[in-house]
Length: 108
Image (tube, rainbow, N blue to C red; front, side, top):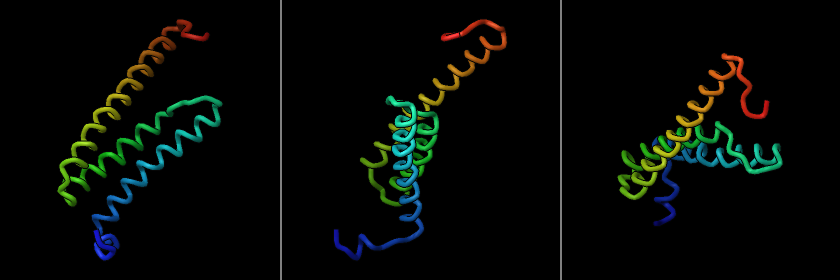
């Protein structure tokens, strides 16, 4: 890859860079959350940033780069991010149901 090609910036490249920024930001969010809790933790926003960044990078890889490896890698990740958000919502729904019934939950 030559420097001229590397420095060619258009709307697609900016879109891809924004997706990468979301994807990178998730690690900073996770690091700060873990430091605040004093233990390793993955906040819910990590999965939303993963989903947003992954979706943007998938679009970039497929429509602009035409890169099968990059596309498949992002596509597979989207399943994991979505599944984790479904599990979080399901758990939150159960906790809300228990609280609504006045039943003491874990740690109460």
